[in-house]
Length: 180
Image (cartoon, one colour):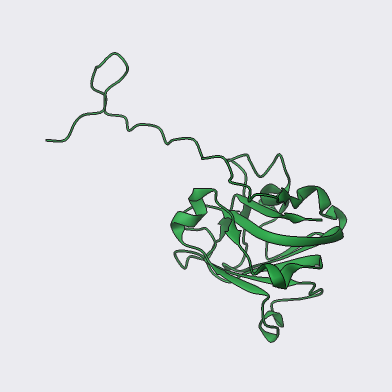
């Protein structure tokens, strides 16, 4: 027989237990969050829902607010361009999102400017991440092919699809870790 949920006083309740708070991000040893090195004047995101823009997932204080997110507009794909104010070495990337609508296939391009949906498949990605639904909620950065990201002036992120194949992709947080 399954045990009923109980309150601190020991009385039974029908309400499920609240979700545990998210685990703190496990920043890789020797790496820093590169958010302070992003050139915000050049950040772009193609196919974003105007009411759920890239700043919700990328900016320091906004990306930690569970109520805010980046969402795609006309289909599940997103193309994000992130320039840096100085050359960085990119070690890992964290993508956090809902299990159903979070990103699945993520292609990263180092120093590729002016990419669009029409030519994104013309270039080989510097790395490709195949994110699982568990990965999106773990708060653990995915390690990148470090040798491919040594002299990064800009990063283009192509979200090709999402976990469920639905028309909308949602991302709560994007964090990039590395060194300068």
